[in-house]
Image 1 (spheres, rainbow, N blue to C red):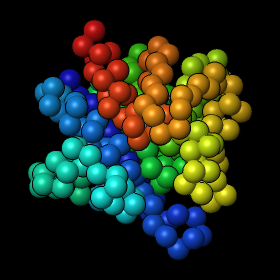
Image 2 (image 1 turned 90 degrees about the vertical axis):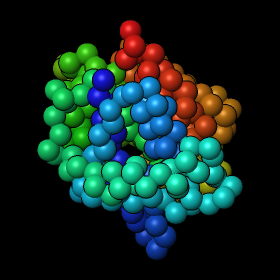
Image 3 (image 1 turned 60 degrees about the vertical axis):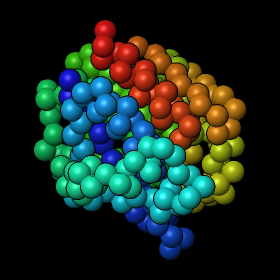
Image 4 (image 1 turned 90 degrees about the horizontal axis):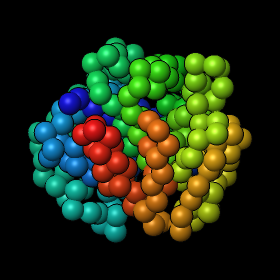
Length: 226
């Protein structure tokens, strides 16, 4: 089994002068959940090389067993530093795709044609597509074979407006994940702020926030083991 992880290459938090990127816990927990089960993970990003880690996600208050494991895992750190360029990736070589969140994807992956076409290709070929936290926002421009938004009529979770307001970035991000999913016709669902909440609808697996990353990985594993 082979799974593709797609990470952001965007590191600027709007015009705040602060840095962003991907949220390390949302990468590390699913990465180890899958690799510990013998699944081969390839990491890709729009620019290739080292994807930017959101510096806030490295703060002690956000550390988990998986982030601590990553900090001591030189092999995985090296793999991350050498992510492949997204446009060189073909879904034919993978069984599923997983998108960790963080704010970065809202700027680049949501508009990236290679990412959009890749997700469409995975879905059209009956392969699971999984997203956590802000990553469901990368579905913003993804369409199905009929030209409708892929999320239209589907149960989807993603970072809540109230959670974005909780981190005071609702006026900084290019769009709110909850809003764009609803605008595209998704049957948006959510649980309590900051608590695990995972939704599956056919091939589509989505989680609401960082606490949902393990659950999304578990659902993806279940699907792959069918």
